[in-house]
Image (cartoon, rainbow, N blue to C red; front, side, top):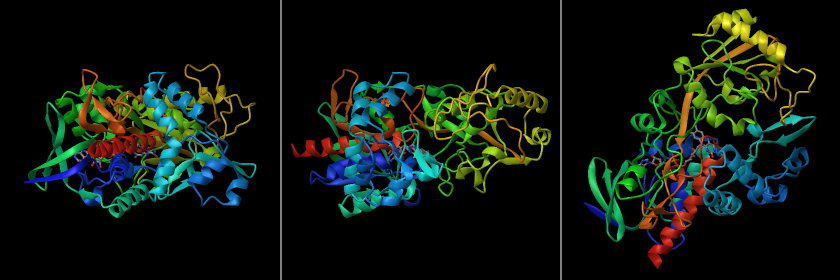
Length: 494
Ligand SMILES: Cc1cc2nc3c(=O)[nH]c(=O)nc-3n(C[C@H](O)[C@H](O)[C@H](O)COP(=O)(O)OP(=O)(O)OC[C@H]3O[C@@H](n4cnc5c(N)ncnc54)[C@H](O)[C@@H]3O)c2cc1C
């Protein structure tokens, strides 16, 4: 069997559909290959809250992205600004200045125009009031550089992208796994696909790979991230097994970026091995800056208040994986219970409550109770209670004199009821991947672009090292997806 299209896009998530929509603007025929069945379509993008990190200069810019913003929203909210320079600085800082400056500049510099372009394709956006702004003195204030989310979260984003593709006449094949690139000395000419158990050759003038990282492949995780990573739970899709990266490497693509690094978070200890679309991102537990995290010995092991959650959560999953038994407990008391995100109130949550700390210690499964009580006593005594608590800013309310101090939002844990939430490590996506040029073309090991081959999304290496600023994954897929798709479409026309 064989078919032919001008552009074939491998993957069914945000990056793939931004590429497909952009390629179609050149008037070429476009096929999207999604290896998942229709009811699991959309990759990790569908599991997200749809939060997107975008550079903007103030509320007028936001109103262009979100014309639904009301005068009341504008009056009651400090949206502030998130200028290009700050986005760039944040990306450089959290990646320890390893991020590829060209990729970083492209991502940041094109973030706003790309979201406007998406808006033109029918994707709607809204402010992230629920998760990124607390109300203090009657006014919301956004913090952490993250202000905008896709309407309806990840599922809303994916539906809107698929609808837009359908309107534009883009074809989608489900249960169609790309297994190999058709390639010769002149470049890439198509894809070999397993479709409903049959092998199909699909000829194409350009191919865009947007099939995610290798986070759902336990063997590759162990091989590249290191021992123990086979034990991490996968937060999202079970389909991102590194196929796109493998196919490209097989024809001489350059491996690039932080191959031993990944995005991983605190995730319910009893969550299933892969993501569950009915729960989405609800197994994450992201309110730890307002409490403490202890391991099986009852000891703290990270500075829970080192920075806004958006700048620490993606690296703390690794810290949990490194603890004995690969688990930890997050502890809160009544004073901060109202600040806990909605994910702490889902049905499938591993939670215990108690009226005293001693009772709580007895309920924390697999934790040394006396070690825990000793740790809380030392922590409580170290809190600088004279500094006012403010969740909207880095308030400097820290501990002093501990082996691991907490830098902000330190509150004593002394007011019942007390709550404990059991977490393990949930991997989101891997950082290592392929090297692309300024057109989104995949670069080979000699440093030259491979003719006819483009890449976007999670499998682009070189952007993230060690850590990640929240909301950048979708933005990266959008910016580089659009770029790769446009170049792929233009190449067919030239
Ligand atoms: C629970 C969770 C919450 C998140 N929250 C956010 C957030 O709020 N904001 C944010 O910016 N990022 C978030 N992320 C990260 C974000 O999901 C990713 O960075 C982004 O969606 C990646 O987009 P992508 O298109 O590259 O990959 P994906 O959306 O994962 O798409 C990859 C696609 O490729 C398909 N595929 C794989 N192999 C093949 C093959 N061989 N042939 C054909 N198809 C194939 C898959 O089925 C899938 O459709 C979150 C991730 C998770 C898991």
